Each structure stands twice: as C-alpha cells, then as structure tokens.
Image 1 (spheres, rainbow, N blue to C red):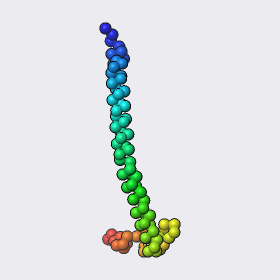
Image 2: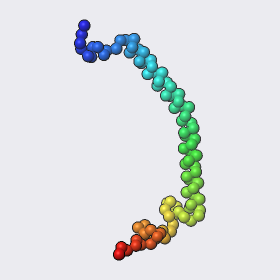
Image 3: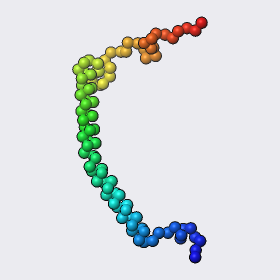
Image 4: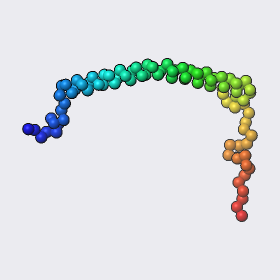
Length: 91
C-alpha cells in the first residue's frame, strides 16, 4: 500500500474516458446553444444600430447636432454652474 498522494489521486483509464466524453458532450451543448442564440443577438444588435443611426439623423435634422455629431449651440451656462444659481453665502 502506498501513501503517495499523487498515486492515490490518479484516475483510471475508464474514468479519464468518461470525463473526456462528458467534456465533449458539454462542448457540443454549448455550441448548440450558441448557434441557437446568436441569430437573435445579431438581429437585436442590428436593430439597435439602426435605431441609433436614425436618432442621430433626427437630431441632425432638428439642428441639434452637426455633421460630426457635436452639439450645434453652446450650453445655456458654463458646465460648473447649476440651474439654481450660486451657492448661498454663509453668515
């Protein structure tokens, strides 16, 4: 009887074959799921791209964006200002 932990944890050829078979089935299942889901993901991504392109075109048609996608007019106030005015002074 051996006390070597590596020898004690070794698997048999039958166990190795069973593990490889399970792994092959798992890979096949993942591929099936991927092939079933990918068309829907691609269609959704295409619809999203179309919607974003249309929204950008509408913003350009409304005069809010230039041809580069940048705002056409400056903001009403500097970025650091709030719409509520300056902070109240402490007394």
